[in-house]
Length: 244
Image (cartoon, rainbow, N blue to C red; front, side, top):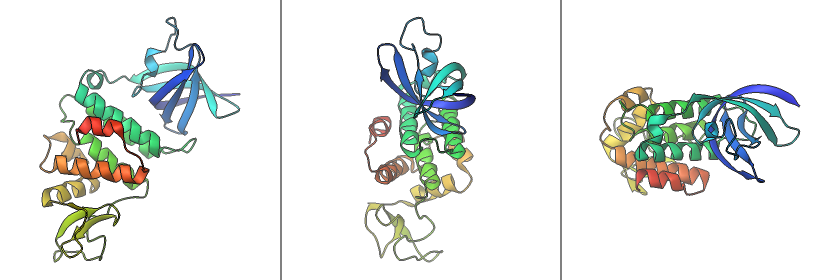
């Protein structure tokens, strides 16, 4: 077996036998990795508390012959104490790792998704930041990474774009915003459309630096439905975090 060092975020874990757990990580270089943490459920375990969901860790792994590696050492990089101590931030953090686990592929490197997840968790852990837009921004950018970017600069149905077209609706089957002639799906307000454009247009830092902007609740609903449609499953933690 090969020994290797890797950074990763703990997505979840589940029991294996009497004392072990299988831990699922989103790693920086190896994508989604499953590894056995031997003896981690014993009270004498040295790194059981370091493998809680959302922990950002540096670990030493044995590469197994099958699908499971073996955790040898774990060091905390970010434990996110503020996030864990606030129910609203915590539930939003859980929604991020649920979506990340569904989008990540086994052993397929996705450093951008890893970087996005770590960055989003760090924003949630920052008491100077309003947490309301973190999850919808993450969902929208994750859709882009997965090749499912919604059309926001013109009508996704008829293709009209520019100043002469007014986008007034959002349709998941059509793939984005719709004009008044093609209107179906959910109504789309001008502030919500502008907010989604800002998220994808390079000003996400400004969106997250101040109070929740106008259109936050609408964008939260639209992006939640969009990511659920893309993944073909309902995300319980997302609904719990947003109350929608």
